[in-house]
Amino acid sequence: MIRVEAVWLAVGASDLRGGIDSLLGQVIGRFGAAQPHHAYVFANRRATRLKVLVFDGAGLWLCTRRLQQGGFAWPQDARGPVRLSAQQWGWLVAGLPWQRMAAAAQAEAIRVI
Image (tube, rainbow, N blue to C red; front, side, top):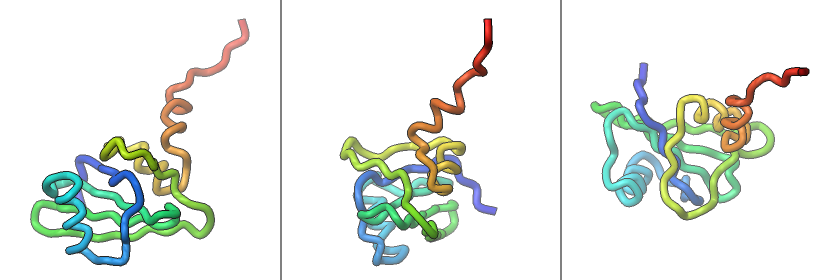
């Protein structure tokens, strides 16, 4: 089992044609280093595909995710990397708007007074 302590999004579009070495170069360029037990997520320009690079402390894992329809809610601003919670990560890979889901998850029940 792969243990992941942090999930980081590489904001903006990435060239996903390369393999592990190419994405590792992008991780080092954007994040400075690949940290153990961290996942680094990249999307293509249309946000229809994701590639996830995970450094488990001993080696690298490369995973690809593509939805059958639609795309991923991918941030396009250039403010830098975005760290996701486990819940946000689950929403992202399901193709849900994870940026708005956090507010909905915190909402309380509606009560009639």
